[in-house]
Length: 251
Image 1 (tube, rainbow, N blue to C red):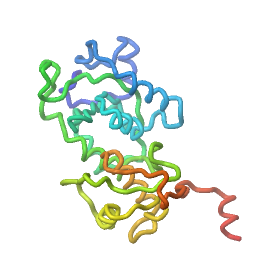
Image 2 (cartoon, rainbow, N blue to C red; image 1 turned 45 degrees about the vertical axis):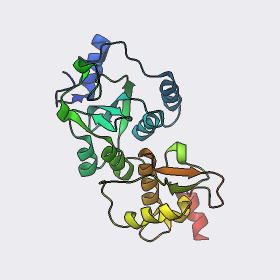
Image 3 (cartoon, rainbow, N blue to C red; image 1 turned 30 degrees about the horizontal axis):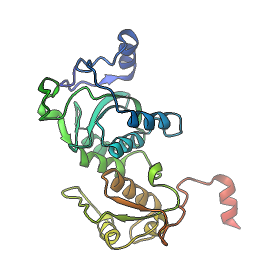
């Protein structure tokens, strides 16, 4: 199999190939490329935390460091090789992962492993490692779809805690789809700085919708996170408090 094949590995086959050969089985992965040490350090930190296999945390790390990486994502029993190119705002995948997220939703999405990119971005001088053009896709729609429809219903760690939020002055969504209450909320966040709790109370919003919006904006590098702003507040809980919480509410 190679990066120009639209066939996806089943998890069992992917792991068998790795066990037998010592590599992933993609024939363009040989070479001297390595992940930058700063990105490796952050991925190692994630690996030893509760977010170790969280696809959005891994992609957020790649975006923060602006470093390309091959992320093996587990979804519906298959391994999806997603190579992200933050600087070029592209990703490479044998199938359209953005459409998969939009159409199927992804309440379960995990990272199997992360490797140096096995292909280069279009236009790179090492043209022999540039794959078929049709398998390169715009990155922003994927990040936006993962933020709004992905598996994470809590804030990405980097933006969680006591904070207030506002959209960066020079950020524009472009042609990315915005529906329902999100449009007015985005316009309001261009004028106002607000906490997650406050945003969740705006018309048409809930805590879950506000969380997903903020995650999506952060992945797109369009979110300002203000810790010392007067509007900063501790984020509301997005998890059930169980039977004890129910008893307290019923008093």
